[in-house]
Length: 473
Image 1 (cartoon, rainbow, N blue to C red):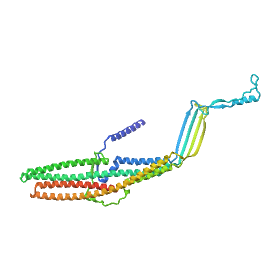
Image 2 (image 1 turned 45 degrees about the vertical axis):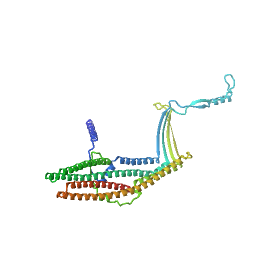
Image 3 (image 1 turned 180 degrees about the vertical axis):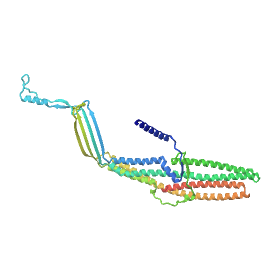
Image 4 (image 1 turned 30 degrees about the horizontal axis):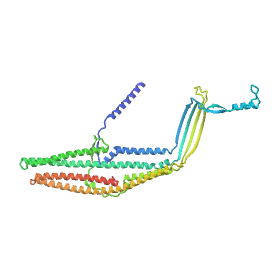
């Protein structure tokens, strides 16, 4: 029974492993996404490798902080060593026994074998002697606690600012991702809208060709009119194919920037209008602290200040407390019977270590100068960044105003083109207009629509650039 139970358990484990392996081998199923521009940004934040790496850098900074904090905690080290001397180390030790013997014999008047008195004085002889036993065991415990060390002291103060710096780097990366995603999203959105108008234009031309064919049968139009309209229809169909391919390329780029696979499907839910682009363009409450680049440089200045302080404090002594304990064992022989006893003794040691820097060849002084120069460079970079932001903000605002003026003008032109086309179409249907006028009016309407969508896209890009310049993207 026990064997059967064990067999069933092994079989279940193998089945589970097989299912897990099968799931791992199955390709990921394509997903369908219906997204707004904000949804697109959220998906990009979740999927893109650059942001994943930036977040991993933040976690690495957290781990680095904890590692640095560990330097301020007690450092405990244990050791264990055993050895057997195959050859004992020896020293020469003077043998005082002969000195004493001869002196006693001489003092007592003892004579040698020939009857002569002993007059020889004792002389030192040397014997080889070892103070070490063949078998030795040593176990120890060491505890060291830093009381003051400049680099650790300043590093503990800079921990929070280091995390702030890492977090700001994430925000800068997110801002760049957001800008890219918005531009790609609205490019596809406007292309889709323009494609819809182009399809309507194709339908109008197809109807015009059909009407002209019927009128040609009745002798009201010439074959030349039909040919001209057909040429325009073919050109419009070609433009529709080109625009559709360009839009598909834009969708592919958008999927890439969202971290999706090309097999996934995207449906854009937002709508873009000229009123939406105009909204909020006069809001200009700006502060340099709105820009993450400025925050990042200010954080770098604080960190560099900590670095200068670290080098200045290196002139102070380093103080640490320590405690050592050792247990030692010695034995003459290594027989299994244990007839040779072990001799055990231990040592305990506690103390304070103070390391005082006296002269290092001006190394610390020059390290301080290097850090001060680096701080000055960061401050110069911050000053130039602020000037560049001022320029960027001015150019972005002027570009946005120009783009909106152009968009408004093209929107009016498109509305006029629609009116002209409807008037010409009515005249043509009533028999008082020519097919050439209808064809020309349709061509002008297509051009006006194309100009309007191009102006709308440029205005959308200009607004994105302006919001980024203000730090409000």
